[in-house]
Length: 154
Image (cartoon, rainbow, N blue to C red; front, side):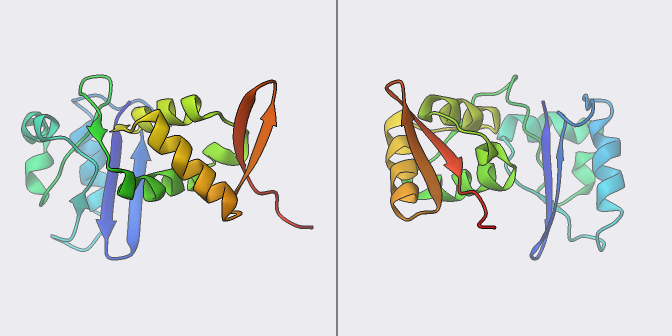
């Protein structure tokens, strides 16, 4: 799975290869196509790794400023600080991850799929904090705690 995210000010374009197949030959074409919709020289890729950046230059990434690609199956995830954890959990929330109930372990695994490594204790603390602030709902069943997005009031 490859994750490509191009930012232009407040606007972002994100491509996740779970949606379609992206390999080393087509990643340059995908980035070139996406960056064609952004003003020249303003495309910037985030959430990448240094090793992927070097390899990507051969496939057309060199034309973009700060272009990087991250493929979690080929690289180690980046450790995130507890202070960054809430923003990463927000990304999971906006990608509909918390539409269904998930345990702390499942959340840690999903963060790892996104290329981020966090300790289960830190994730548990942050999810509990979010639940106490009523940002998400905490449910306990069969000695397992699940977290889910709050249902919309009707």
